[in-house]
Amino acid sequence: MAPSDYTVLADNELVLLLNQGDLAAFNEIYHRYWGRLFDAAYKGVRDAGVCEDLLQDIFVKLWEKRFRVSFTKGLGNYLYTAVKYKVLDHYRAALVRENFRGTSQPAADYDNSTLERILLVDLIRHIEILVHQLPDKCRFIYRLSRIEHKSNKEIASLLDISEKTVEGHLTKALSRLKPALYAGYLFLIALVFVFHIHPPR
Image 1 (cartoon, rainbow, N blue to C red):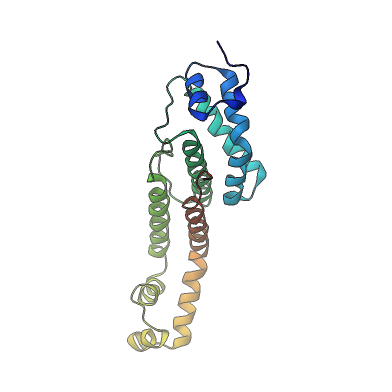
Image 2: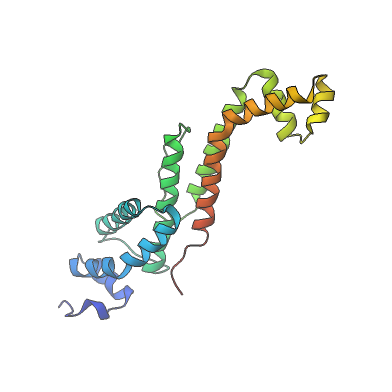
């Protein structure tokens, strides 16, 4: 017999009912966690509309898996981890929109940390592609400066050119790399966010 008041049930009891396809149990989970998950997601994306879309996806997936879902670390941990990966997925989509070469691998089912590595590899790969597309001398000077950490004076002496010419090449290189470097900054913000999101204790 279904309980008369779902609000008094513990999470594990709600999950057992959810496994039986109990819509009222699902609704209680939804209302119990929506506000807290929204606040957590908003810290990462700062866009209420995006937060709502991310959470709707999470709860739709939860309902679709209702008959087989189980949580070794608890329902709350699952939902907060789902938010982490949805936020990272949001940033990954932003990278793809900026013409990053994405991968066909989707976000995991919120039980591993592969997405962070995918994002970082995509970012590094794209920066390397942009560096390779620089004019030969510009690319060489950029590598001397940013990879070998030589000063403009050292580069000028090595190539027998003026420091002003070195500065010109570096300015050109950085202007082409700026979108990728900015995306990298956003990615680091996302990582800081996901490493600090967890269920309230």
